[in-house]
Amino acid sequence: MRSSHPERDVMTLPSWARAREKLIVALDLPRVDDALRTATALHGLVGGVKVGSELFTAAGPAIVRELVEKGCQVFLDLKFHDIPNTVRAAAREAAHLGVAILDVHAAGGRKMMEAAVEGARQGSAGQPVPLVLAVTVLTSLNAADLQEIGIDGLPESAVVRLARLAKEAGLDGVVASAREIAAIRAACGDQFVIAVPGIRPSRHDPGDQSRTATPGEAIRNGASLLVVGRPITGAADPRAAALAIIEEMELAGRASQP
Image 1 (cartoon, helix red, strand yellow):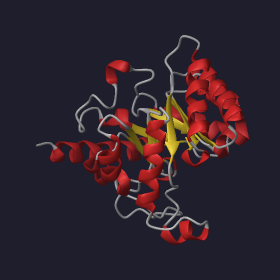
Image 2 (tube, rainbow, N blue to C red; image 1 turned 90 degrees about the horizontal axis):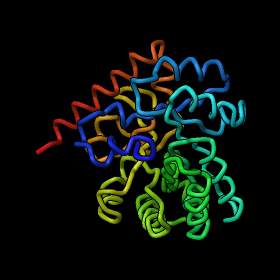
Image 3 (cartoon, one colour; image 1 turned 90 degrees about the vertical axis):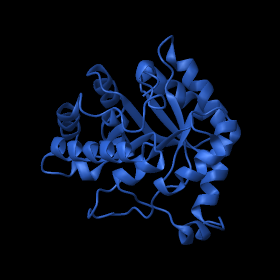
Image 4 (cartoon, rainbow, N blue to C red; image 1 turned 45 degrees about the vertical axis):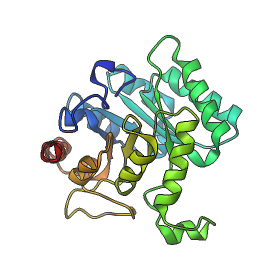
């Protein structure tokens, strides 16, 4: 991830190279000891770990500090969505914790996203600035769900509109499903970071996700980062599950090369 390892920027590598650097494991677990045990087991194998609302609510910023101190690249996935001043302050504190990536909801608007970028820079204090990503449309939502909240049309249209706005606001990239990657690339270019959740290996239960993809599909479509939770953390052997996903990513990347 660019913020901490510029020599291994995910956007400068061939799509098949260092697949493990592109894999972020979501520690969506309620117990701190389980999260730390999983992070330790996967350390050095994957590119980073994600701390979301469940774990952060259970453990607070202390879990982020501990993971960072252990050398983990942390994606703080709290999806900030508030008035610009509040989001600026939250992003500043997130950067101060030493996270590699943080995210905000693009629906918060241009001024809020610009404030997030400002806060991330302010909180870095001479350290690498975290990547700031915008969440476009949650992968659990489909067209019917969007219509219920007053957004007409297909999810792809909303995703691309929000991705363009995020780029104009100075963000590094977005969080979106694998189905929208091509459209985002066409709108925002090859250097725009696209982190893809909703990753499910073949024959794996999609759970509460609506817009899913396999690891291979996401890599072939051009994902920058893959965020995988339950298929790894819920496995009997998380390390073996992560290795299987990395292998699929590498094979897909090689096959997609000209």
